[in-house]
Length: 185
Image 1 (cartoon, rainbow, N blue to C red):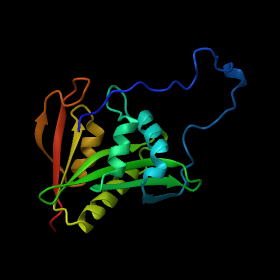
Image 2: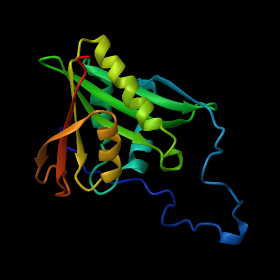
Image 3: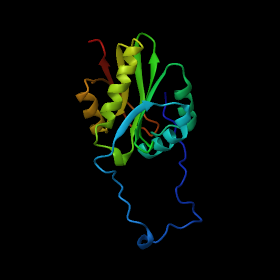
Image 4: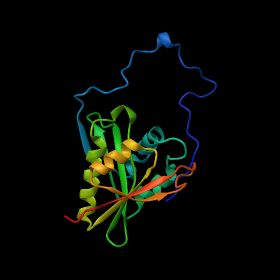
């Protein structure tokens, strides 16, 4: 599925100025280290929150449109999860699709920038793989930007291997890598 480039809403409309820096409250951008997370199914009722988080996670033509999320979350082949904090706010998500020949395709995974480096992506990957196994998937595939070394390292550590380079895979011209993993154990 091609990544669709869309305009992002602006947080500060052009006719409104941001408050002066000295009047802004001192808010920590990083959640406390003791924050608790929970993994739950991702459904259509969370589409707007998921789409907004995707806009924060991906730039340069990688973010999906709301219509794409509508398709992904309503498809009968969809396998989707979200990670939430105690207050119910979404910190990350993963969406995959069942494909022919016992194949699962991880279509997108995103973790809010302030929640990265907390093993949330690993947790979501393990959860979606379990969801795929319950639906008789034997091979999982995903695409990753060739310049995204940290994501590639995560996938390699989870047992994925690079099988193909995908020239100009992304809508902004960036190359991708196809990675696969066997779930037969």
